[in-house]
Image 1 (cartoon, rainbow, N blue to C red):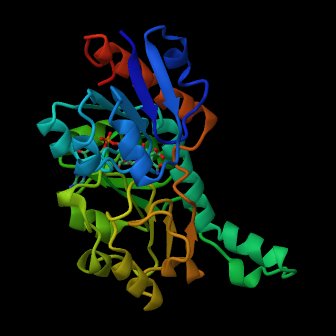
Image 2: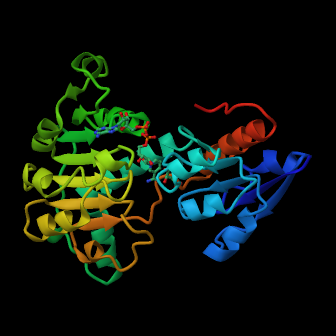
Image 3: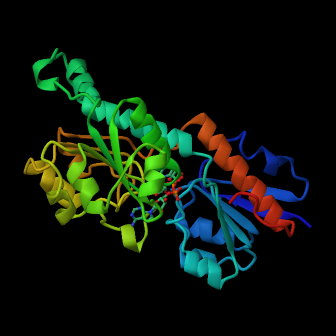
Length: 312
Ligand code: NAD
Ligand code: MLT
């Protein structure tokens, strides 16, 4: 029996080697398909692999009678209609830890770039302006990093922030005072974290409960000198409320890797000098892309051959 696997988004070539080497697999590797083409190709597919560009809607899932498994080469499964998948007997697998390190490192890069105005200073310099006075930054040492969502990435960010001699306070529904003490950070409720943070970083999944978790009211609790980061998912921070808070100088800056609607080219937040941004690059390293592609490829093969997923 030959299984047809459709690759819908660009994936690491080395990472999908297990699929190319499998004798019982036919690969259709055509990332970036228009909706109608994707729908047509899905009609004959046994499995599909996506990253974050493709949204697996109910319409697509229902148009794929042979589909047994969708692999998400990454963490967030918010671009897959999970109800539709369950109702149609389609298993969804992801790669929960393959990109943890890269995303934590990206968050730290954004944190430092935000504190020291690195993108802004570079832009000025490229335009012939040797600006020093206007580009004065702040130190991280002894500042408080507030973390909302202390899962895989949040924990790695906490570890790195402590290395920068920052104080860390975090909220996560699964965090207790005792667990926090054990890893040398402070435990707080959401309000405590918001009030204490000089820098706030969110690392939760995007779901109903976390949509606009950082809204107007939340931003009002923060210090005017505070800066916020989102390297998790667009939609956790209310972009309209963030824009207002930045315009009104109620927040000092923001670093955004993700947006509610991507690609976010032309977004009004990008017009503000206090905002630095990257185009959803958290997991974009050679290592992370290879890891996540290997993990989903292996799981898909196991499932198609009648086994279960190996990655948690
Ligand atoms: P994880 O599942 O390991 O951690 C998420 C944590 O959020 C969990 O500990 C959970 O208890 C906590 N949480 C859930 N609801 C919460 C709430 N209401 N308030 C506070 N905490 C809450 O996930 P992870 O691997 O650490 O990923 C975190 C986020 O980063 C996800 O949204 C993921 O999609 C995103 N991500 C982005 C990139 C990128 O390229 N920018 C790369 C990887 C992951
Ligand atoms: C993820 O959830 O893993 C990220 O969005 C990474 C990605 O696929 O770009």
